[in-house]
Image 1 (tube, rainbow, N blue to C red):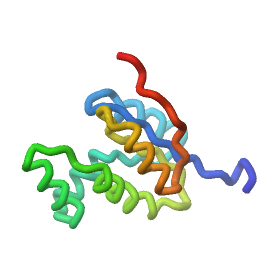
Image 2: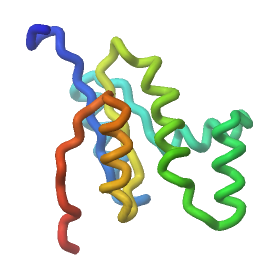
Image 3: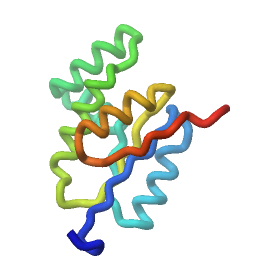
Image 4: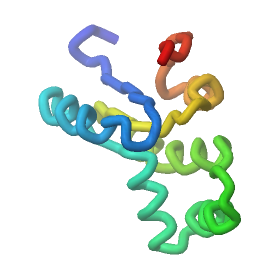
Length: 120
């Protein structure tokens, strides 16, 4: 595959309210990427009452974090329809970046680099 035919797929992670959406909108506009937000996907699926949305809502109602495997299924469901597009996924991190990175790598959609959480 030549350089001009390669697809750009990227993931940006951060805690809720850290500016992922703001940065992502600038990046997607500049590079003409499809933008997917895990938070937006989650809210949409809960509103539509999808299987994943209903499952996620049960965790939220119990005051629990939505498990990574549920969030990964949610993202994968959307991303598998974008095989011919460049995209940027903005993902919540909130201290679980290593687990999210492993799940994203398992999707074989992007190869997330190994990294350590920056010191705060």
